[in-house]
Amino acid sequence: MGFAALIVYQDFRERAVLWVLFPIIAFTLLSLHLYHSDWRIVLYFSLTNVLLVSGMLLVLFLYSKHIMKKEFLNVSFGLGDVLFLYAFALGFPTVTFLILCVSALLFSLLLFTFLKPLQKTGTVPLAGLMSLFLIGIHIATFLPFVPSLYQF
Image (tube, rainbow, N blue to C red; front, side, top):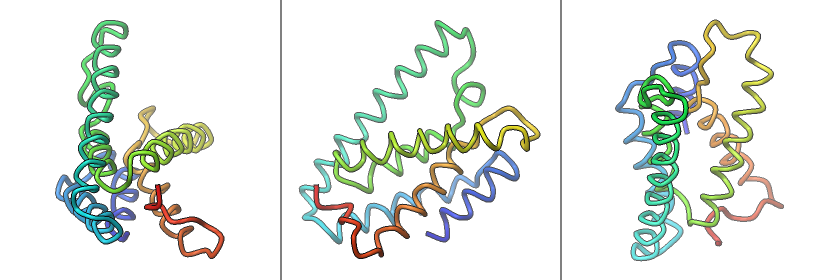
């Protein structure tokens, strides 16, 4: 998860993340998923998760365009955030993904609320905050009482 730490650092420091980190994170998460499950199950879950992310992004796009009257990409939502969500979608069974995605978004909202006075810009480093959450989740899985992320 060293690459996730690099995403956290770059997103907080520059509000821009090197694009090559997202395929690396996607490959790492997909590899972990494949290690724990059969490839047919992983394919099914990954496609389901990608469809869910696409639907969520479509709703955000329509809200941004028609309600907020703003551009979507790099104004309302960053390209890095989009790429991170798709990478994140490849790494977990659907139920686990939904729980982790909602939890990561809530974590990002709460942490940004507290960090906002320290920030120079008003934009949310969503990919960085979600990467921080992902690092925490993967560290927590080493604790004996935490269930496997891949059992659902």
